[in-house]
Length: 319
Image 1 (cartoon, rainbow, N blue to C red):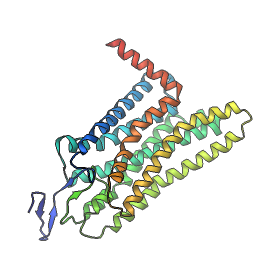
Image 2: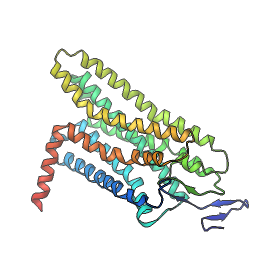
Image 3: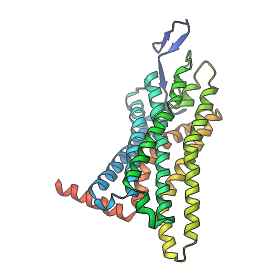
Image 4: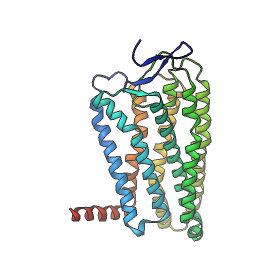
């Protein structure tokens, strides 16, 4: 019997760790993929830290829209760091083994940060809705108090909401297979190795995803429907263009985030066999948004670009 198996009190073999094999079909040379993934991770860390530094050092950027962006950067740092160190350890040090508690903790962290990212997108959509549809009431509605309460609500909602996902996964009986054709612990990927019925896990994840991120997405769509209606009523083409410009970067990120999330979820729920494309998409879904968000906002927001230049110039002067 291998070292990764142990005998339980019920006389059944129970695995004590999982083996993350990485990308299916390219195990021998998959370490080359660590180079672009490491660059994405470093860009995500550097860009999000730059955003946080820029917002904190520029009083003019300490407005609701930028404060929400700063919170999004914190969430992105957490999401990227949840998966990338382990993935790079697999490629560089062949550290494929992961204990069951570590695996279930990663499942929890991934779902938690994805849910918080979805919630922050909703907060940002609400911010744009009030700013465009009710500009005169904006200062009295979107206050620092509202931002703090909304952030705390999103943290507690997702922190508590996703507990059943790893808890149910931990209740499954893993009695034989322990090799996962993946770089990270995904709920349905892990529970597919269980010897008992895992339908309750699939149903739980589907229900929680709809109640959490599904409701967020529905409210985001509703917010932008109201924004579009309000913009179309503007008599000034210049004002309409400016209003749409402030929302375009947000929409780009939302479309990518939810589209890739749906594709990843469907491939798992449909029990499609893991392939290089599906596993790579799952990994990129967790690392592309953290590295893409700062770039999109920097390109679309003049105030941020100016703030970046000030922070970078100040850093060079200190050296």
